[in-house]
Image 1 (cartoon, rainbow, N blue to C red):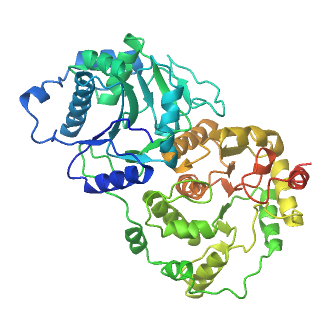
Image 2: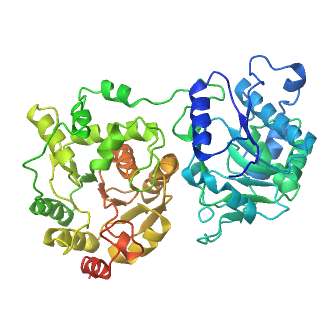
Image 3: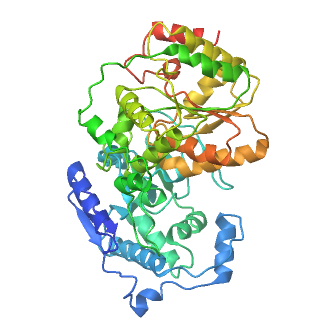
Length: 500
């Protein structure tokens, strides 16, 4: 395992973050860990404070250089200043101690399991690299990133680093000795948040800046922690979300513990005729899917456990998934499919107590059995023939594969793993597209894991006059084996029936 030094910028009051990172780094086998926590936002010295200088002229100049927008100048918060000063002092430490390579973390970073591959990143980086960003900030990838200076490029399986020329966020990156020198010599005084300051320096000094893909980390302040820069950190708690609603769903805990035994559950595919009729009649509806793994996720308190799709069960994801489930249970226009035995019993119990009003279809539109059921075939053939505009939210490979299959009009890209980390940007892209199209009666199709239900929950509340369908991994077999049932030639031949 690499002995590369890791420097972690930490605000002492955020003890949960230190506990998580200490445990996680130990699990992954990293021992050269240095907590940098002496720069307190409330006790910075005059010398440290002098590294920051407000300047409206410089603010405009740097923003125009990089962002090409005239954002209004503002004073940075104490937290932003302390974070920036700490970054700068780490750069100086690297220079003073002649450290060849180092990793810099901010304490909200979340580490994926593949962080253990950091040695491969270092091996692949050229000797003259300056920085390499390890995160998946804002869902940016080498394929979908666009900017006036730097363009997207092709993702090549097996290739781990790409020269992009710009930063993502400053929560996690590799830095070389030469990179630290260039940043330190050009960043004082800073007037922008520290990650914003990087890019003009990169441009003006022609620095060699890379991105790692697949990403090794995620910035927790995007969606898991509340940002501590000027605010107090708070980690979402699933139990609190349950208590906020009249449906306690306490049965979930019993079900997952095995208290319930299902004797009467049977799938009823004929119920799909109802949804097919709605498609034929251009009637709007919501069709979402909750399987056994989703119910496990809803009550999980195990930060970063891994689910069947190799995605992390962030606590905020668990909470949002539970909120979406409660919302759909109460929505007359929502149909909950992909029925697991757990879901059947939860909903049957709640229905008997008159606590829910949703339509429960004990069948599935997921194409996971051979031969494909007649009612499933009719559903997808009707979906393809529909003249309504169809938008597909999935990874780039699936979007390209499904455009001709279901006559997709638009595609919105999500990462293949940990779609939840891009929830905010994907949601905004959907909203922007709806505003651009400027009409109702659209059909939105989703293949984004558990995040599909969360995004449908948020978007359908804002724009109820559309149809939202989670088709899951139904068509994965067109391009890859993602489940034990979809990797055979026979399965691919059955898929063709759905759109021929």
